[in-house]
Image: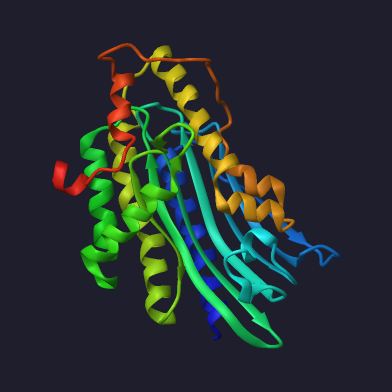
Length: 309
């Protein structure tokens, strides 16, 4: 079995496993699959396909989307080659699994995870390959217990692949990447983020799998703790308002969104991360001392393990 087949088999299996577990956790709705293909054309995208799966209007999740894609092209958009001139004119193939879950209960955080592999070739020779991915958590009403657990799992994922040093580096990368510059705040409480991981293929493939497998270990206990927490219209409206920050980041800053759209990717699958309902409010300021005001203390880089452990 070649390397790309091994990666593809892992990714499709990961999508299947996460769907089965999340359906069980929701207990009501099921994922609907939209299998798609892209034919070779004149643009940068040569072809490929994927499986976009969406769960809607569940008991726990208002919307949960998880997609697998395997696409290739004959050239990369300028945004992808600006810092990597060796990729100019190279054919490429990218595959990955990406998910975003938007829970119904405001006390249960939104979450995102992604694992991916990229390879570029010229005249039959590989000129670049790498792995990327991570997972992050976006609470509206944070609980220290949840944040600590999330980062403990992230540290455990990194342990066989560089231990505390890798955890600290990829946590920092996550804090810096998921940062809304125009708001001066992080998107949530972070987690792990990595890209362009190359060197030893087996080691980095193993790390990507550890991150993919670790996601459910990190998120499932939080689902069980928060899914039945009582809430009212105030909490719901604050959740919808804060979802606006999620939209801002994904449309303004997210590299995956930009790459997908610029490379001729499938728009519906690329934008599945957006929440089903959201609102904006001009000049909103939470009441002093309120639970809503307390969120601000969590929207900056912090050493969660040292502070909460």
